[in-house]
Length: 262
Image (cartoon, rainbow, N blue to C red; front, side, top):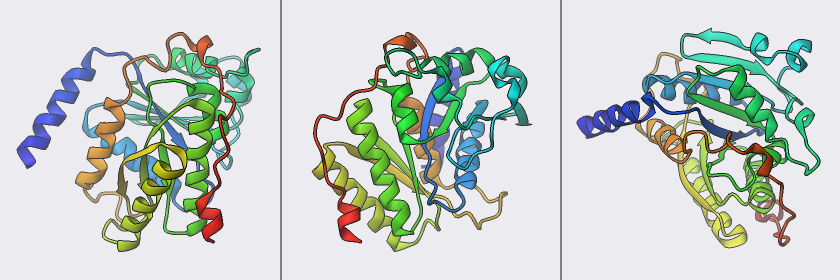
């Protein structure tokens, strides 16, 4: 099993060696305690594949961007480690909206500001992501923990992106111990509701314990999730032809089963 995973990782390194930037959208969830640790864990999984990641942090509780962001994004990028950089970007996507309501030009601006990165990880609310990734070949990552309110928020983000951006396949990363039975039940419930109410799919999921040591090895599930997110993001797919990413109107109204359940 170990040799098979090593072969897969080696294959991914070769695949990404001469590729354009890949884009991974992460749906911010203000109800999740330890969301920053989840993003760090994902970056660590990418780093194991020898990939450089830029975290574009546009969540509702993220830091305000520098005043220079309107002039030169590249000077606002902070290097945290040889493999991870960070851009405080709360509110920045909405400054790039065009006449069609699309903010996809923001992603072009970020890619131009960081041409040496392999992965752009955009952490933002579902409403902003929908204006950037509509009709794209990407797989959004949902965040949650064991608090029912966080699960309700994760489902709401999935519903918004399904209806407004036409995105049908998702992954889930949970802030809890990997062996908690409740984590499995939550993932199964999200999977069932996604299929039954939205027609979308929760493809895979993993857990990361926020209380674990930062030096603890990554779980096989987290490594697998990271690889799946990369393989679901064709090189440059979300950056090319940004002007054609137009948000959709919701086709129908689906009730929120998590709201009804609590």
